[in-house]
Image (cartoon, rainbow, N blue to C red; front, side):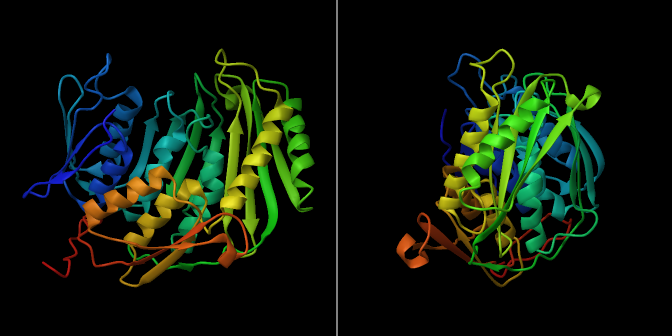
Amino acid sequence: MAGGSSSSSSSHCLSYAGCNFLRQRLVLATLSGRPLKIRKIRAREEDPGLRDFEASFIRLIDKVTNGSRIEINQTGTTLYYQPGLLYGGSLEHDCSPSRSIGYYLESLLCLAPFMKHPLKIVLRGVTNDQVDPSVDNLKATALPLLKKFGIDGEGLEIKINRRGMPPKGGGEILFSCPVRKVLQPIQFTDPGKIKRIRGTAYSVRVSPQMANRMVESARGILNKFLPDIYIYTDHMKGVSSGKSPGFGMCLIAETINGTFLSAELASNPQGQGAAVLPEELGQNCAKLLLEEIYRGGCVDSTNQSLALLLMTLGQQDVSKVLLGPLSPYTIEFLRHLRSFFQIMFKIETKSPEEEHKGGEKVLMTTVSPNTTCYCFGLRTRSENE
């Protein structure tokens, strides 16, 4: 798989090679209004071209926009995308069961505040898997982050109607988001101390006792550090339980300053890999949360790119955020922000000695220029035009 080098032509069409970071490129192309061409998508593999989950993602982008032009060659190895206007409205989408709903929802969280009409969308598919952030995770961490930028109100919610585990899925969620054309700049540099831990232990089409066993083992580790721990058990039955059996856990640590750090684990899909004991899963999930707390920062590693995007699209004012170590996905996202929006971040490393806690931190600072943005159907002229 090619990593993807970019080149910008005189017509402002960005060109990339390879299938990596497809979502990032399509989302940023849509927000910036710049056409995009991606070549050599798995060109050397036995099964070349776009996968079903990527094709489903492109269909979703087409649904939320109006007037987008998408061209894919016969083998699926070349994609041309000319973005339309972000339209929104009431929609439904069946996600591919090979990736979870989180794969699609992460990108919708980036696009939804900039629609012409408030977005209200029903997504169907896998709600929890081992690859992508779960719907529980995004509900608990991404929504509070959006609120910090002034994207809030009754219209902002993620509701899980049905759970669906891989491989067959069968879950359903509702995501709604109001339109916010002006974002608040943020100064979010002190995460604060952990004050409480909340979580959800879910089980579908297995014994309800599985959830209780996960809770007991997770509490066994976390109670050594903090007394205020409450983990809800969520056992869905009948139609609400989807089409495949499974169980898992999502843990959220909340600080006194409103930082949310998350960790999650799910059982192996039916018929794949060895069976996992709920006690083992609960313990491992608690250890993952402690690891995330050690990495720290004001935004957890799942939502780093969302925070940086909202800082980029904010008002012409200084925004600062303290992050833990940057994930490879975030590093590539910063490169893409430079290509699509010509925005650069000032990056300062903060050693653990300076911060007196956890791992090495990174302070990200931006002054958002008045970037050309096509999201609302209004073209804001940048200063250098």
